[in-house]
Image (cartoon, rainbow, N blue to C red; front, side, top):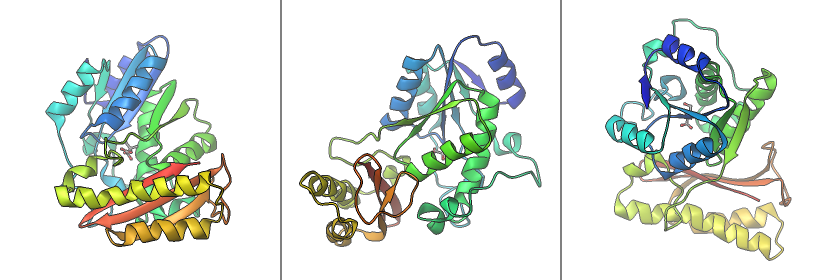
Length: 274
Ligand code: PAF
């Protein structure tokens, strides 16, 4: 595995690769969720590039940029063992210049739900993903469905800017208890982890309701809120279509049920694609 820290080196290395390239951008603190993206990239491509970059522009003032988990040594081992060909680990100084031209999230999609709670987060996220996609110039790039709105916005950016790479949505990975894997789970105490399970439990209950014929978003949301409210501080429970428009009735094949909630000082999100 080659570790690269500069953009010039990455572009030169990329130019030397023939055949398909799979790319997995990450912020490090790698877990099974990231590994599933890397494995899929490896299955579908001759060559795999992974990036680790804790992108400062997608963190808001007062968010966890400074304490975001960093595990460089372990991450390098994980990538090596997974058969990653190139690991790109730039610094903010390498990725950004001062007063730069910006990619902006769309006015509606970028500022609802996650964007409403974290205004500007998606601008920074899209800015860095655009840079990383241009640098790695992949055939396909792999993103988890856990960050559903991020994924939808990246797909829209690829459409808007006529990017050539395929954006591949990948399934959410959960631990044995049902908790969706996230680098932020390390912030949870054992007791908080138990409470955090209410997110996946509420989604499981929603699945059951839909499977037994319930379609009313209002009714499903109410039951989910009941499950969540004793264990968490709910930020939102929303039922939307794949373009993130609110749905009054669940539409099979076109629905995402989203939840965001705080457990102690940790903000968690989870979702279900129906
Ligand atoms: O999902 C993430 O880890 C980040 O938002 C991404 C896509 C790597 C951009 O920094």
